[in-house]
Image (cartoon, rainbow, N blue to C red):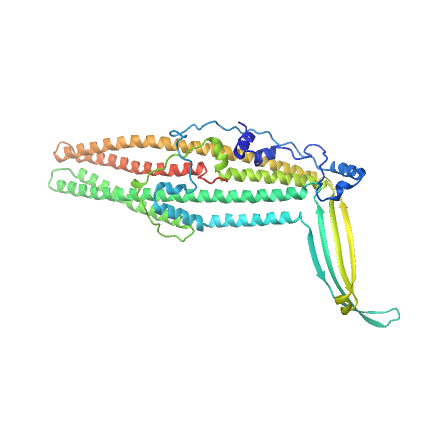
Amino acid sequence: MSARGIMRELVGGTLRTALSLALRPASGAGMASTPQLPTAGMALTRRPASVLAALALLSGCAATVAPPPAASLQTPAAWRGAVGPLATAPAPERQWWQSFGDPALSALVETALAHNGDLRVARARVAEYRARVGVAGAAQRPAVSVNSAPTRVRQLAYNGVPYVTNVYQAEFQASYEIDVWGRLAAQTDAAAAGYHAEQANADAAALAVAASVASGYLNLRGLDAQLELTEATLKLRGQSRALAQRQFEVGYSSRLEWLQAQAEYQAAAEQVPQLKRQIFELENALSILSGGNPGAVARGAALAELNPPPVPAGLPSDLLRRRPDIARAERNLVALNASLAATRDQLLPSFKLTAVGGVQSLKLHDFLNAPTALWHFTGLVAAPLFDGGRVQAQTDAAAAQRDQAVYAYENAVRAAFAETENGLGAVRRLREQALENDARRATAAETLRIAHNRYRNGYASYLEELDAQRTLYSADVGRLQLRTRILVASVDLYRAMGGGWAP
């Protein structure tokens, strides 16, 4: 299915898609055309045929527009790395982080969404672009102004005698540009599309912040679990070191075994400050991300109590509704296409109406009671005759920007497909790896049990037990890391599938 067909399927015909807007040549693209003149409330349509013919001739002055690039985006029919029956899995919820079942995680994400500095900047930009829509729309409405300028002048008469004159006046001025060719409407459309693009950008920033906070919190709980495991292992290593020392002192074992036990104890002790440093730095990062100062982060459920949520459902085309970054690329494409139309029409004539009316008197009493009314009405038709190719060059630049937006939109869609495929594949392979790790851990635990019994009964050296301890500790650390990675991979998958942020 082509990208144009995808977007039509998504919006159902009530809205034009970004790609189809960009790939549809604007009126007059590539050739001179005769725009349809507005008929509602305009006297131009009642002019003689010669006037309309002259306007049609002037419309041929519009700059030519290069043809848009052909669509090259193809949507896959299904995901390569599907995990389970997607038809029965739930779609991602808007507040997907609550599916982890940890109130502390939910509170941290909601705090970040309310106070994150980058999100505040993004929301301020949304307000700015909303105001720009008002500025662009104001150009399509009449402008009315009023001014009053009482004047007192002392000057010389023809005979050299000075005299004083008072002039009291008030003036109202109204001006209106008739948007015959739709240039002002195109500028308003471009501003509106830019506003919607900034809204989508704010949603994309919110999704990124929520995913970053959730991933950081889950990594923090993983480090907490590793620290707890390391401290418990350090306690056991201390007991083993004391046993090896006693056996060396009574001559039951060699000094080598005692030194090996000492080395294993020191290796475990070395991990404790390293893990504490990582926890300290990650807490500070999460605090800053949540809009606060560096500090501690409240904990909720333990790592073992956190379960990854079900894999969200959806077909590849669903991403075009869910992903805010795709919506942003789409709206940028719409904005640039509208800007291209407005730029192209700069060579067409503009029609402006100006009406000025006021009152004036030489005496204040007459000004307040019976002033003299003055007015004038002006109709202006202005058209450029020669600009050295400036407008055509601007049109070519706008067309190139439109083409860039087309390619950027396609790249955003392909990147979304790739991120989702990678997320699905990561969840699937990490689960398979976790199963192998469970089997490895069970084997290592049995090996340590046998090695400990052999050493205790004098059938083996302490080195065998130390080696079994190292193997089991490595399997335990790998188990915690895999569990953390599965949880983080679930967050990445929710972010890749849009996280419920449907524009």
